[in-house]
Length: 340
Image (cartoon, rainbow, N blue to C red; front, side, top):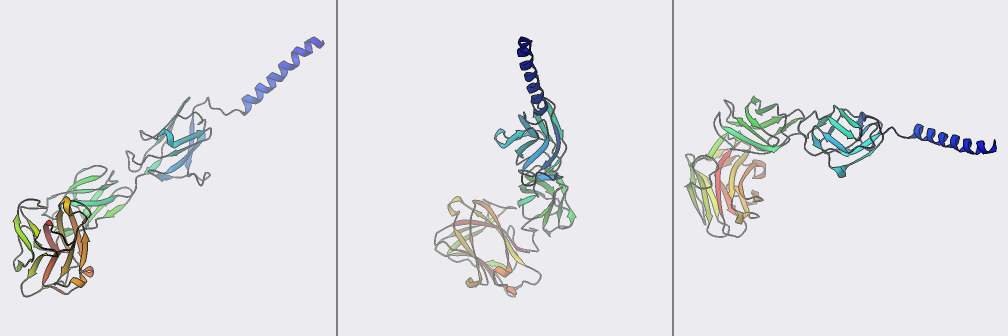
């Protein structure tokens, strides 16, 4: 009997240990399940939506062997997720295919689970558009970001026809009746308004100076029918500053031009690489004390829209001056000068 007990007792003990292990071990050999998504700060309350690039916690079961997490076919980087049996902590990629609906798929050693979820792109960003003016039917290219799912482009409150769109670029046709307007781009996430206007209320220089405006530049050579580095149309103004603090100056013959109904001066400047970081001071009526100094940050065409409140807020205009202000001899090109 003693001999039999020596054999039976260890066997029972081993069975008891095995039973405990099976009961307490996580069921990682079962298919994964996803039950919700939370933030890392609040891991209790489930979310209905998150944003591109957020850190999230995917809650569920049987997740310990996760080796792949994708968001609508875009994989999360291996270094940006951590899994245990009931959660996966992961950083959402910065760019996803859909502006709103991007299902989450978790793949483990024992299967996959997909969770339909709203992961939203940021609100649209509008950085620039070109050309800056033109008649109805003109194709305008809008450059920015987060344009996926664009639902409308408006010139003020008038819908434009969308020709094409990508994540960072939209091409539209200017609607009939528009000569001056702000541009609004709307996606499922929100609406953005352009910083500059499309078109002009009054044009001073397009391909030539408007009647009663004239060239009164000093210490500078201004060619008003230049055909290189043209922003729009056939001509631009090529300016060679021949002395320090020379100026391109455009003057208005009597009577002076009333600013009633206008709010800003708008123009474009082509900046060669040698002039990046250089300065030009913009003044009205020869009043340098109330002018605004511009520093060119980028080569190529730069667009400006300066409120009259930054230029002295005069009730009339007798001249507009673009004065070289770096004590250097520069070559610049000006186009599309007007008022809004």
